[in-house]
Length: 422
Figure (spheres, rainbow, N blue to C red):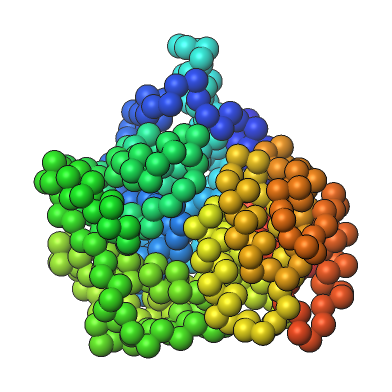
């Protein structure tokens, strides 16, 4: 049995990432053994390629502002491991995390006794812990972020009040397919019979697929109309108008405006369907109070860290940098996982960064800095094995006209953020 957080976290992080079968059989069995805790609270399910975490946080904070106790399950973490599971503004405690990890350790052993191949996965363990915690704390709602895809994701055992899908772009293609249609179809796997879907998709070619799937599930479909957004002002903070109401965000970027509007429409539909008391002031304050570490987070007015871990994220980062730091010399430090579309990401970075620095960090799935370096066609590039050394050198050499962008994997961003905070 685990006695401290280090032991518990070490066991969780060393479980297999994927099971012998890509299905929901293991988590379904584990949940049945524990009394199906996921059926004891109301939930909102959030899928999509980018913006899931931000959208989930917006929804959670609006509900909290309205007086509800709200669980939030997201991944991965940036500041500390416990932030994956929280209620209102408080992360799960070390004590509770250890308690539930011990429960899952016993469940895992029982599953393997019946079938040696039945190894519960890393994400399944965390998902069940979140469900147990939310049940035991008697939350009013839980906002649950999909880990990967949707259809066969461990979170897809829930039947939510509302399903939410953010944008759709290329990511996790090995698991989800090589076309936007196959990726979208997998994410549409979260749509349940009679459960409404709110989405921020903008690719008109995907609309028929969304209409077809929701019609077959008798699910009401709401597609956000971003033409109704006006007066967008993206700076260190972001403001905009939507349907004649003014909103302010403490996180930056045009893409965050879209995430916020998706949250607004999700809340409005939830309010209508569940007869909730949520005022417009609750929505305004909930959005304003949302902070999300590692997502276009600015330090010292000249360092930006952003977990843009796929092509859609890099494009959003580029647009925000160009909007906020016009005329600045852009230096970029980049590290990413080897299973990502790093060649396409680097093509975008080549086109808007003035200097490119490739590095790597201690993580088995990360790409080699030298490999990334040779994928770039930039005229001013270099690679560095020691990410701490190059980061501190870049930070100390920044001039008035320089901006340092640190981007790529959220795991990499987490390591850089520790250096900045410390």
